[in-house]
Image (cartoon, rainbow, N blue to C red; front, side, top):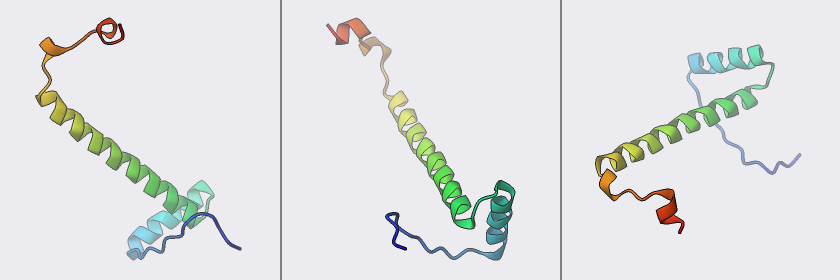
Length: 75
């Protein structure tokens, strides 16, 4: 049966595989769905970390004296 979603083959160490298997059994889902959800969560954490670093960089150059109010911007 063809699928519209791309496939990914991953090689895991036995302890990682067993952890995912136990989580899948606990959550009542397949290994594939559990792995997909864990990857999504990890990407979300990675993205949050990335944007936090960008914010911290911008905070270093922030000058409150140059800030405009909402009304000044949207006249």
